[in-house]
Image 1 (cartoon, one colour):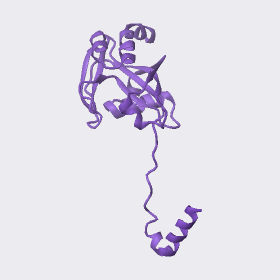
Image 2 (cartoon, one colour):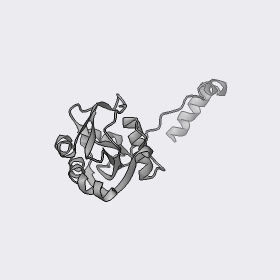
Image 3 (cartoon, one colour):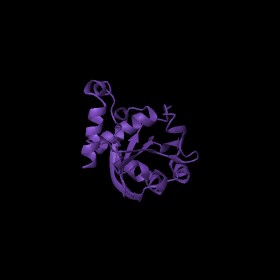
Image 4 (spheres, one colour):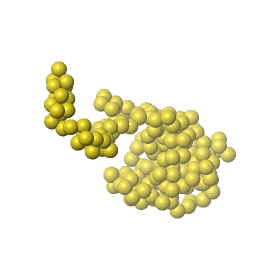
Length: 178
């Protein structure tokens, strides 16, 4: 009832020709992140690993990560995130789905990005083998710095338990992919 009255007031107060002037304006629709993500470990055959430092949390190092967009396959998500976060073309290396999933609690400070009540995420792990450590192009709004480091040191440097777990297992995954 209130809504109908309000619409009538707006209709009579503002003629149609006036409202048409605002037709190009669009309301922003909030799109929440899907609680499904990828973790892409970029490494060389001799197990050097690329780590990137988060811009929103200086000192927090990680492999490439990112949420799946609606309609994407996990592989497409991995390819997109590698390109967005490093400038690398994942198709130029050997991208392998390691068939590992980690479920974890979303940090409270990042929950606003997800629909109300969503507190957990499922992460799917991929590996991307490149021939040697190569320069990357970081997205400055997302990352501050990068480093290539041996996988065991990388496992000690990352902030995420799930990232550390797969970095420790990198020799097994790399052998399986070879």
